[in-house]
Length: 507
Image 1 (cartoon, rainbow, N blue to C red):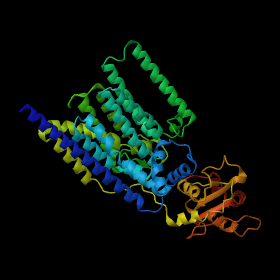
Image 2: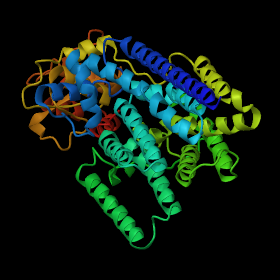
Image 3: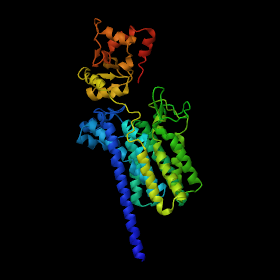
Image 4: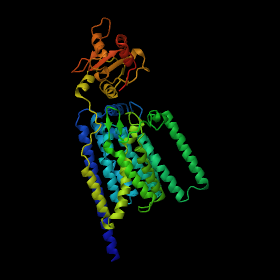
């Protein structure tokens, strides 16, 4: 009788694992296909920095190194896709697949913190279908891939805290290193969640006493110093003080948008607000011990996740700068939302659903989330206009070797480098005068503005290298100007316009 019961339980457990694996595989495949459809709808790269990724991948294919300093791991993971297709298609395929894979570590963490496979499915469903995750696929691909790696590192760390075997500790250490090599956000996520959890677990088992405490403090100090040194030496690759150059706090926005510039507002499905509500619930559950008992490390991990969710909903977080830290932080509100929801859903199921139906109820909730969410989230999607692409392609061969394109708009700047292989700078100050070639779109010039008029006049002025217009729809839709011609134009602008364009405002 006992043997039969054990065999039956094993069969049920195996069937459950197969069902969960099938559900996760279906979720990842559907999500990757959905993301690919959004990215593949245009033959050109998508996003403000869309051309940045093909440039990096082309450089890897041709030279084995990146064109611009950056955390390297995400690009090397994208490299096989670029090698099999081309840098543009490869970047899109990699973005779709790697960001869709966020479902797997989200499931692993959710299942551990929620003490239930069903809770893991809830976390996976929310992480996969979130507006923030899709936006990372479209706009900040390296960040999106980095979060998949960072959550994997966090999952490996939580596993190692539960069973401290050499293999699990080694895998967790490898995951942490990978997170630091992938993206700054991934590294920060591991630091704020995994490190406090590990310290709490070590303290609970009495491992932080006497010499071990001294050694631990020393190791943390060395780690902090190494991280600081890496940030100072390579701020583009690692967390550094430079990341705080942009204001972190500003005017209160109680609607909690991810970005609000005055011209553009991105709400990202109100995920910051939802994350705050879920985080408050998860915090109450773990502090009042309303859920199944967690290990000390898991409890601290939940508290850290909840604190992150509440921080991201701070109304005074500065979200008016597209390059600012506040915007980058609030985009990832789906992370504490998904992980906190796993804890809350599991606790509510424990209170309200009979034990034999809990797994099914949580799985049903996960399915309902997938079905209720919009299939394709495209908020914030920036497309390259075919006419502008043709205009930039028309610059090919017109900029001399050794020159540097001075381009005020970041999106077009990467496009110029992709099609012409000319390096760019957004600001002219650090570029020698004789190497400056200004590239200006009509959005910078202003239709009918004094600059628009003087660009037209300069085409017939004697002794000048005339401005070159390459846009198929407007003579000044995209203009290439030598530095000497630019100075001639500036001198003939009205004082207010001259002052404005001499500052060279960047977009």
